[in-house]
Image (cartoon, rainbow, N blue to C red):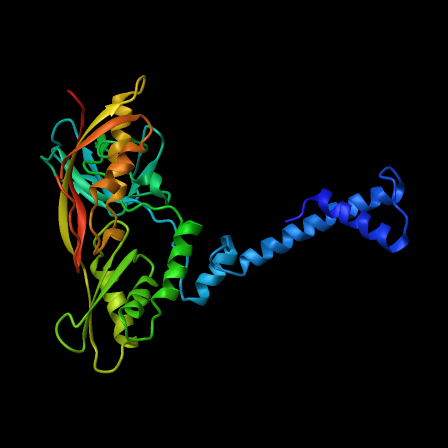
Length: 352
């Protein structure tokens, strides 16, 4: 791309060649040529930008969305983290204590979570677990165990709340690079209405499906098994039925298609972490727990869990000076119809 100065000199040279007169740079016409050169460069920049939007390899934002739609692909929307809130009392109550739908709790950082079902703490019990989700979609809702501690509106008789396990499944809106990769991959694996790519693309067109894996001849000739996963991991029965009905309607004649949840392979993770100088270990530990939790999403469907990839994410956490993964001791090899899920997570201080 030419600079303003290069365009300006081209205009001055062209004028001199046509008229036989050389312009002084401080004359009025030379000043006008310089202003014109600036405008011409702006148009050149705009033209190159427009050209970039014409190809999925370089398009951005809504223009990349347009390329994706031509391939039957849409940008993944942000999703809410889901998990469990535990409501407790100091001493057992003699009566049932209702916990309404939509009861809200939050972390010290003011991330809010609400119950997705009404519940009751039975008389004589100290706590009850209730399904919940983050109020706002995004990866920020993937908080580690024990992060949610503040009751914003206390149900009658309830004195405490926490999350016994990590919230997971929260994901930010898909960025351009991830969407671009899926668009380009769709050209490399062209769906034809009968191959694995078609079944996978059709399954992933459903809201809530983060990954899909189609296995041909899974139960013999003329059969296809399609495994699906959500950001949080395993799909529920409603999503399985929805995708099953869709593929059943679109499938080829005489093809027996089944939509299934993958087999979960629980992976217990134990990590030793050394905090950087002047870094608070508890704060670093919480960030590491969140990072490991987010790593285990449904997008690992059929893939291997690589220690190198997990380790690189841990080391990239702010405040981590060193780390050691004690378990698992080797990569967890992926296979058709399986998905690694986070089991027990233990983060301890290195050298303690």
